[in-house]
Amino acid sequence: MWTYEKKLQFPVKIKNPNPAAAKVIITQYGGPDGELGASLRYLSQRYTMPYKQAIGVLNDVGTEELAHLEMVSAIVHQLTRGMTMEQIKAAGWDTYFVDHTAGLYPIAASGMPFTATVFASKGDAITDLVEDMAAEQKARTTYDNILRLVDDPDVREPIKFLREREIVHFQRFGEALRVVQDNLNPKNFYAYNPSFDKNGARCKLDKLKKG
Amino acid sequence: MAERSNMLKQIQTLEFILLDAALYLDTHPCDEAALAYYHKYKEVLAKAVAEYEACFGPLTAGGVMSKNKWTWIEHPWPWELEA
Image 1 (cartoon, rainbow over the protein chains, first blue to last red):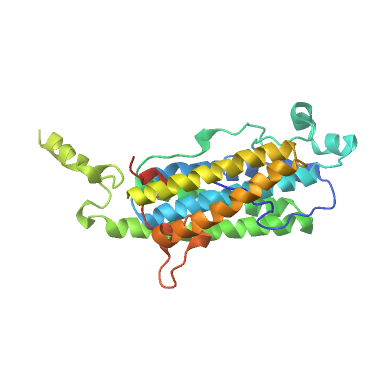
Image 2 (cartoon, rainbow over the protein chains, first blue to last red; image 1 turned 90 degrees about the vertical axis):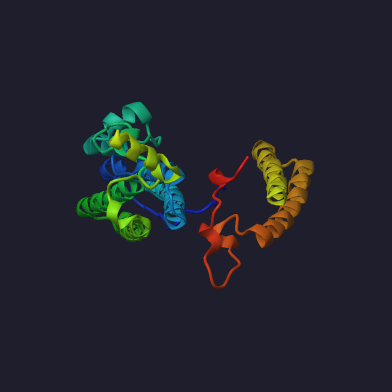
C-alpha cells in the first residue's frame, strides 16, 4: 500500500525552457535504464526474495524510484513549459510534440515507448540482485552522459542528486547480495535457486538427476 | 495471529474510508459535512495505527519504535500474511 506525499524528493526549479535537454533527459522517465523500469524491477522482484534485508532494500529502493520518476517528470515538464515553436523545431522536439504536445509520455531518448523488456524478474535471488547492481550502474552512466550534454545548473543539480542515489543503491544491493550469499550452502554456491528450492524442490531435483 | 489480523482489518477499513472520502473531496472541496467525516475518521485511524504498531511493529519505516534494532524489515511482509 502506498500514500502520496505532496513534494519532490529534491527540488526541481528550472527557469528556462530547453526541449533539447528534455529530449535526452526523458530517457530516464521511459528509457532502458530509466526510473519507471527501475521501480517495476525492484517491486516485482521483492515477492520471491528470500531474506528480509534484501526484501527491505528492494521494497524501499523500488519506492524511492517512484520519487525519482516524479523528479525526472518534473524536469522534463519544466524544460518543455512555455517553449516556442521555433525552440521545438530547432531542438528536433517536433517529433515528440506532434504526438504528445507538452504532455508527459514515457519514452527512451530514441523515441521508443516504455517497455517491460528493459528489466528482468527471474525469481532467483542471485540473478535478480546482480541484475539490480548492473541496473544501478547503467542508470549512473546515463546520468553521467546527461551531465556531459547539459550545461544549465538548474537542471544539473537535481540530475547530480539522482546520479548519487544510483551509487548508494548499488552499494545497498551489493550488501543484499552478500547477505544472500552468506546464507547459501557454500558447496552449492551458484547451483540452486534459494528463492525457489528452499521448500523441498531441491530434493526433488536431486532425485530427478539421480534417475 | 487473529488479534493481528483483526486490528489490521480495522486499519484497512479506516484507511479505505479516508481514501474514498478524499477522492470525493477532490471534486467537492467545499463540502463541509464530508470534510467533518474525513477529520472524524482520521482521528480514529491515528489511534488504531498507534495501537497496532505498539503490538505488531511498524506499518511505515517512520513507525519504528525500537532504539536497538531496525524492525522495519522483520517478517511478515504484506504478501507473506496468511489467509
